[in-house]
Image 1 (cartoon, rainbow, N blue to C red):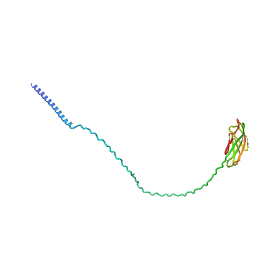
Image 2: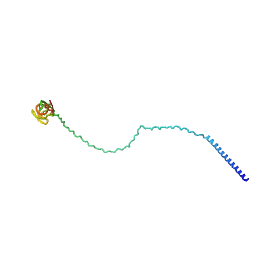
Image 3: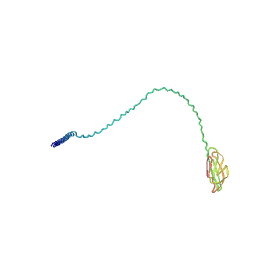
Image 4: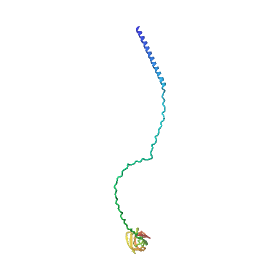
Length: 211
């Protein structure tokens, strides 16, 4: 009987302790809820305010002075420099050169004309006139060329001297006074086809033509 009584007492005590613990937990929760509610009402959420725009202030331009600064060099004491004496030389007397006047040489203009008088297959006969158109006496010379003749030979000459040099014959004579003329003639022989004729002539100191 005593054992049953102790079991009941222990169960009752256990029930009382469990109930008290539950009541204590509920009380703590109620106190916590009461404490949190007023704190949230007193501290509303903070709203972020927009930041004010930044204004950039431009720096004023530097002031440039219009008056240039002049730096003065330190003054130097002039040193005494030795004076140099220059020797003056008198100019040499100018030499007067005599003026030499040269007179132009007199012109010599010899003109010759060759005229073929007769021509055949084996030679021809020609007459030549040489005229001195210059202003001083000259010794004349005429050269006659034969480019198209073969076996050329000088057969005779009158009033002049003749000398054959290959296909050319050189004639010369005495002295011609200014304005004077000289006439001479000659005969040649050759071989070839067609009538024989000279190809050209040349007068020393002038001109020559073949007619």
